[in-house]
Amino acid sequence: MFKKSLTLGVSIILPLTLVIGCSESSDTPSPSTDAVSSPSSGKYDKELTITVSRAILDASTVKDDLEAKMLKEKFNLVFKAEDYSRNDWATKMTLMFSTGDGPEFIPYSRDQWKSVEWMSSGYLRPFELDEIKQKLPNYLKIWSDEEWDTVLKSTRFSDGKLYFLPNKRTIPVQTAWQYRKDLFDKYGLKFPKTPDEMIDTLKTIKDKTGLIPFVVPGNSSSPLWAVSTFFQMFGFPDLLLTWNSYVDPVTKQFYAYPLATDQSRDILIFLNKMYKNGLLMKDFATATADQTNKLIAQGNHVIAQTINDPSYMDGQQKAAAPDVKWAWVDNFDHPSSDPKKTIYKKESYYSFWGPAIKKGTSQEKVDRLLDYLNWAVSDEGQLWYTYGKEGVTYEQKDGVPAFLPTMSTPTQAQGDKLANFGINIGVIGLGGFITPYKSFDETFNKTKLEMSKVIPSKPGYYGPIEPILQLSDADRKKLVGLETTLNGVRDEYWLKFIMGALDPSNDADWKKFMDAANKAGLPEVVKLRTDAYDKANKS
Figure 1 (tube, rainbow, N blue to C red):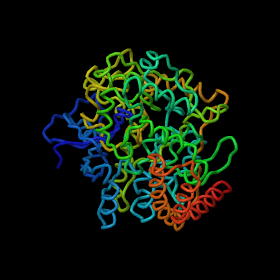
Figure 2: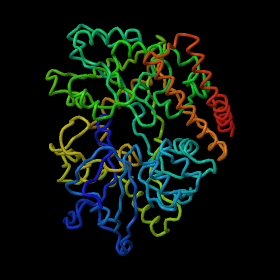
Figure 3: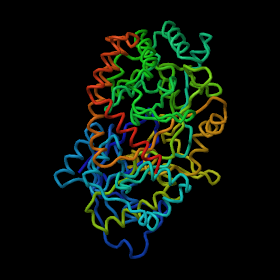
Figure 4: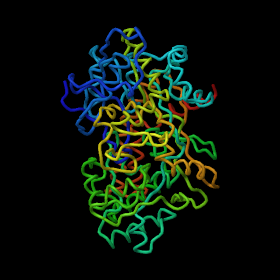
């Protein structure tokens, strides 16, 4: 069906998103038995073909589809996959579901990708709690009782049922500022401690080098994703474009829609200064990953709030800047508009994505999928999805798996990716459903593990909280419709403020925004979200 498989394009964010693949060829030899355990005798005698739909971004040639071989050998499963552009995937899926079609298995569903709409319309099959306990014991083992209680309350639908299996985050603090230490040292600069210092420092680097200091691609869901990395400097969570609401962990105050309140004027004034001084790429709202990767490879981009290892950042720019040296910010400090507060990104227990199954899928196929998913989160499954096949993608060194030198890793940008072996397509692995193998974080995320101990213990550090909301089905549908309109108005006016068509410090211009937001349903959104928050936190 496909001569090439495609992989989710997140190499600039995390080069090791590990996921599901499909068979490229039927005449490839079977894998050796050391790749996976043999299937249970007789249990999987019947081959099952399951239709799968995957959201992808960049093409990646599959040279040897190890994933398809594993599925066949271990579970006698064949995934008949159709891949769609990530930007079109949700629309295509909704259309297929609405016409009675659609895949039986989705390895990766997201709220922002219409999955709530699919739940509401009855397209997805719920995972019953008793079923999870009986069929997915390995999945429940990865959560503490407190974590699972929070995850279930946060991700269940308005009918109280769970329609996808959330992914567990393994590191509570993954993101911190990094910078081109070689340039900062060359010009006698220190990493900025405040937003004003950020602008002055980046202006100096731009004037000295001609480089664009901040280069990040936009996102199809909102052009503001490119600049959301600066939200936390002003007390907002960087995921506010997804959450829309947040809770202040110190005051416990709930903010229903702060991006259309006076709270957001300071950040807009800051972003306007960044844009006016050429510190942001001019087309940040529309740039593609290919465009930004090209600029970064040319040496542009000198600061980043990122989860990447510094050596990976070095690898992106080494050709254009042989002396490049990225580094984490000393003491993990974060520039803030309040000198008494240094805000970090505190990860939630889970990611709002995970596998889902189409309603009406036969019980035989459901049982086979549940067996597969339960294995995938076992130690054996985590090892396989984190490192691939021993001897092909990794080797054991003193009892610890290590990628072969030919492989790309979080610390080495060049080389084969697991996607080239069919293990990085559709987001079922890292970044999706499966937690990394136990040695992975110790090997590649030592700094993040250190950050997770150091940052939360420092005075003045905190992370904004994602609120739990409880909405009826009718209110959810109403809110989705209102926010689609409101978010469009927000994006339109924010871009005008950032790019200088309107002045965020001018009261008359600000009134234009608020009038448009109110007309687009801001009061109704605030009421629906506030009522849903109050309901969830009183129950």
